[in-house]
Image (cartoon, rainbow, N blue to C red; front, side, top):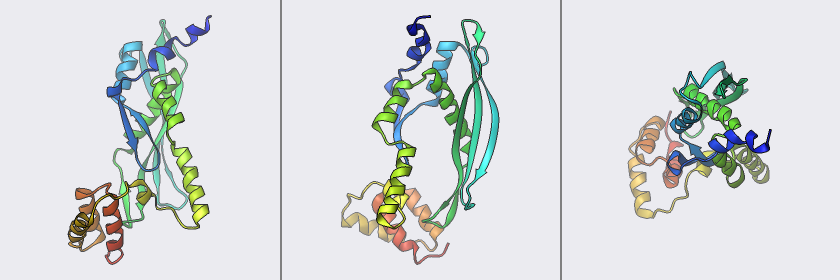
Length: 227
């Protein structure tokens, strides 16, 4: 069999249109995300409808607790099957995960996601389909042009060792403030109306989420508030 035949599916699946791409930077890692519905559409175009030309079987679901008890992650493992030239493939395994519960140091509270398993499934599905070449151009770009979560974990570890102090991930993830004294005064005035950390957090999320200056002001004000 010619080498080009081995790459037939890969070449058919590798390209991703711009409208199906979305850049992201969640503070831990950044890159380009691929629209989940586009993945399904492309699989349908190449193999046929779900259930007839391809299908997925979830083989395990689990919740894993961190050793300090402050973080819970949801994981899903699945097998992808595709029909090529009338023959079903062997299982193509994919695994994905997402944080369900985590401790928010700034607000001394627990952040919980009710979509952790759904996002873990999407992650697992993308990891299975990429082995066929689906979205390969984007995956390749993410690995070569952007820092991955594994790279940034190493960077944060090195930063802690170099500075001797903990790295504040939320502050590092937030954009640097480019605002002037007027906005600082407005933010401070609004945040000072909060009586508790919970109220302060809500004001931040409703009005200034992702604003580096707001994070700085909220951090200072939270020191004098109760939970």
